[in-house]
Figure 1 (tube, protein in one colour):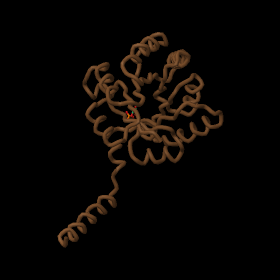
Figure 2: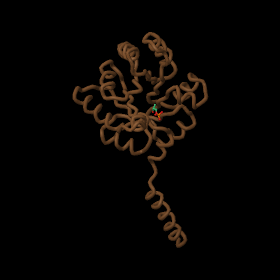
Figure 3: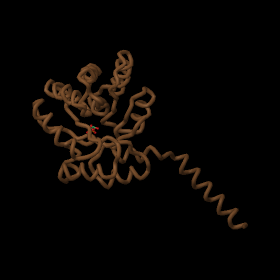
Figure 4: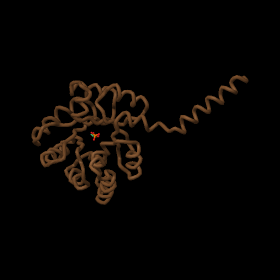
Length: 216
Ligand code: G3P
């Protein structure tokens, strides 16, 4: 499974990237707002040290506008993926962008059927939001399993990019199902390295090493 970092905060992305945890980056208007910096400048800076795909979200509400934005955003870095919302205009744009060889990530996916439609339109990635489904009392991970089955049934090459991740548990469940990518907030990525028994084991090894070092 690939790990993307779901953030527009350059320093946090750098930190997890240095730990070898980053295969790509996803951003959205909310994350850009949180970072509090200019959109283009932020994406260009991320692209200067991340080689993997960087998703940049379009804001236009019609296909023509989305396509124009896509052409501009594609020049902001070496591996830009155009994020498009799931609706009729979005799907028109994805179809055209796919013809032009521009990679897309269809976002705000909340059902397996929406994912299948995006894949049929030619999306490179679909982003189902598991946490937001859990928030309203659904089991978000169920749609990941359904999407995996549908894509496998029809040999669809669109990648499942699990988004709105709230815990390491979401990531392990998504990996067991066979999702291609998890996009993860930096704080949760760092949690993946942690286990209380690892910390306890490190402390015990260091303590024991002190004893034999004193005997040297
Ligand atoms: O990339 C978008 C997605 O991960 C949003 O997550 O936490 O706002 O539901 P969240």
